[in-house]
Length: 153
Length: 169
Image (cartoon, rainbow over all chains, first blue to last red; front, side, top):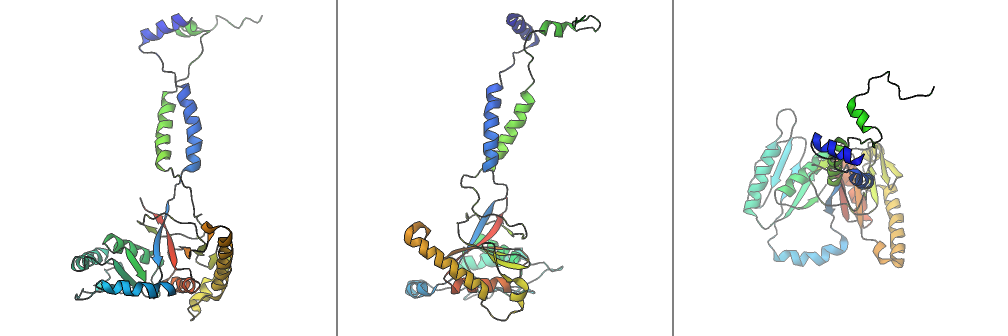
């Protein structure tokens, strides 16, 4: 019987590959991977508040470096940047109440060029700014080379 | 009587020759599908699992941040309530209307939490109080609420704040 079958399949062109072990493997792997799969990935933005003990120990260390304070204010009208020795223009909202993210990015990059060693930036949102906007702003700051973000009220 | 092998129906020559042999299923397409599924699942594989559980009643903002979350107490800010580890500590409306910077209910809950982790730290150093806290905020909450929460955390010694976001892409 087997001989006849194989002869027949050879005539038909090609024998069937035995896929049963592969199926067994899949049957084990797929439930396992489904259990460990993560469909929504959560990540975090780190924000370090100055603590009472750190303030005293870090202060002399910081004085050695050139202290550059870059402020980024955001309110219902738009962005406002402040950096030493520079006068970045105010970035008003675009038509339709949208923030001008592209303009902000170019200004941030200009500041980064001028103060290359600085990685600190302080964001000052006004009271009614939405959390989402603040997070977007933090993304933009980090992408422009200011990963040490602090938020002040 | 019970002759099942009737000649009433025309049996094709092929099935006649296969009679008695084990019928084989065509599995190739199934294997193809499973391979694609396997690749997809491997892509979303994560070894360390979910540290933070998502809350249903709030929408986290999306971000390109790539830092992995740490295990820490979680403050959830929905559109109505402020919760510390699923314990309701204040309502958003009441906090928004209040002119005081400190949230009394939250501070009390944080102090209890801090006490617990300091006590645990005496038994096992890896559980000690590190000042980490995760904030899960709805994307629509105003900064006024966030500011008060951050202030209260700072007052109680929780200085490392992690803002939970949904990773994009």
